[in-house]
Image (cartoon, rainbow, N blue to C red; front, side, top):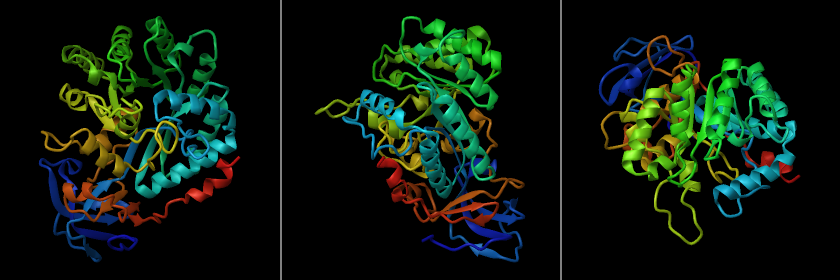
Length: 425
């Protein structure tokens, strides 16, 4: 049950606490009023007259979230495809074996379940990666198209193909056909990079197809604790060499955190120069990285978020996997991601607010509408009973209120039992 009940229609929410940057104001938090009319924010001024006014008693208000790195096609297969040992290779092999079950109906049911959860938690824009080999691309991107149509006006949905870098050739193999599917659907070209002997050639072939079809690109990069895995450097160098100007996103970038500091600093400088967008996935990375049986992990598995931000890089955080072999937990709840990223990456007690890493930064990286709380913006809000950051991060905020077009939505989450018949097959 929510901490308060809000009416539909026009109203003024008095005494709300808002991150100042989301109002375009200096400082950390601002106490003000939000007036809502015709589904939009009409005013952010305190003390405005209103026919219907509700004292929010300091409750925190945010725009709806942007979750820029997810895997909706993998989501919720854990009951039938659990990771045997919690390792990255265990996840990879288990998912590959489960591909045989990924009919369009199977993927669609699980994707629908995930979108229902994300919507109830307060997310309005998602990019999902789609496993695109093993004959999956045409079927799974067809599901994405149906979901885009079904969820239009609720969740803006993008998709990026996911193909191992050593399978990428410009004129042979499956990847040129995958690139055509991506282009025809207006999606993003994606790949997983790790050290291979001909990495530069494979990247040149990848970017050749990206330029041929005028596509944005999104990489999974160096998702390992091996300090010699530095494909991030080669990606940045290739972007600069080619003068590639479409948006480039790099996700994970784990190994940089275990490199010598001088080496990492050089790569970060290249990432900044190339204008890459970085997305960190703290919950999944902490789950998989530095996992060895009988040994306590020595690091948190995440990238150098603070150093990247200090260099001027656009840094975001996102959910990643949900109840699949790469991450056994999660619910596409960006409030949870914000809470856990703050704890895992020490986003508190530092200079400069990180709040945009869950809203404006991912929106800019993906080209989604930028979430904001200024006059004229859609009244798509997530409201928590907490009055400051420590109250917000101390509890899951499961009684939050979500407004879409100014009206409260039904936040009932889908029941896991809804998938029982599907996952038992």
